[in-house]
Length: 344
Image 1: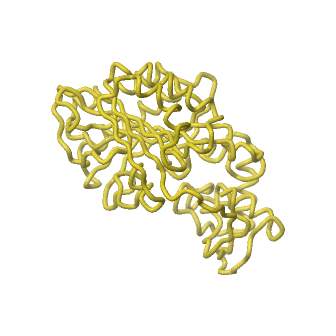
Image 2: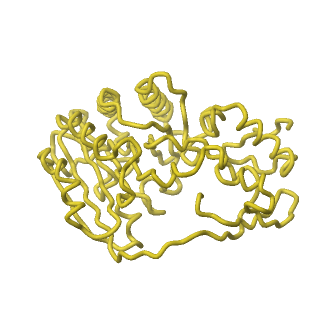
C-alpha cells in the first residue's frame, strides 16, 4: 500500500480515473486503507526493489507446551516492540492440532505442512504444543543463525529448515491461495485484532482455552489461532494521518480461523463463542487499549472504529468521501463504512 504511486480506478458511476498524490488526492488518501469502499482498481504503478537473493531461509520450530512462557518472552525480545530488522520477513506462531508430532499433545503449529484438515478428528486427551516460524530475506547466514539461537536452546520437539525461492515462500507460511487460511468452499469463523507486544499470561490463557475447546469438540481440530509479527520500520516511517490506514503503531496481527465444510454445521455457534472468548482475552491483555481489527481478516461483526480507526475524524472523512465518490453506496459488499441500504 505504501509503495503505490498511482492507482487506475473505475468509480461507482463508471468513470475511469487515475488517483495519486496529485490527481484526486482526497481519494488517494482513502484508497490506501479503505479502498474497497470507493472503486475497482484496474491497474496500478508501484515502487519496486531488486531482489538480490535467490533463496529465502525458513525455519520452523515445534515445542512442548511447557515452553510457552519462555518462548513468548524470547519472541518479544526478538521482535523488539516494532524494531525488528526488516531482513526478517515474518515471525509467525499458531495454535493448531497436529497429531503427527507426538501422541500426547496437539501441536501449536505455525503454518507448517502438517496443518490438519478442517474435519480432522483429535482425541479429547490431546494437549497443545507450540510451534513458531521465522522467514529470513536471503539464505541462512551467520547473522540469522545467531538470532535464532535462543530458540534452539528451548529443546524444540522438532525443527525444519529450508531455503526456498520467492515463488514458494507463501506455501511455507500457509498463505498460498490453496493454503488452509484461504481454502475455498469453506465457512470460516474468523476473528482478528492488533497489539504491540505479546502478553505472556494472555498467550497462556488462549492456549488453555484452545485445549479446552478441542477437548469438548475434537472435530474442531482444524481450528487455528495465528499471530503474525513483521519488521515494521517501513510501516512506521509514514505518519498515521498519511492514509486511511489507522494502525501504524501496531506490531502484531492475530487471526482466529475455524473452518467448516457447510454453512449449517451445528458447531458453528460454538466456534463463534470460542472466537469471541479468544478475542476478549487478546483485548484484556492490552489494558486501556481499544479493540482493533485488521480489515482484511475482519468478518463483519467488528465495529467500524476497530477497522478504520477510533479517532472520530477518520470515519467522518471517509463518509464524506463516500458521499462524493459513491453516493449510492454501490461498493458496500465487504466491511463497508456505510452499511447497505443506510442513507449517506
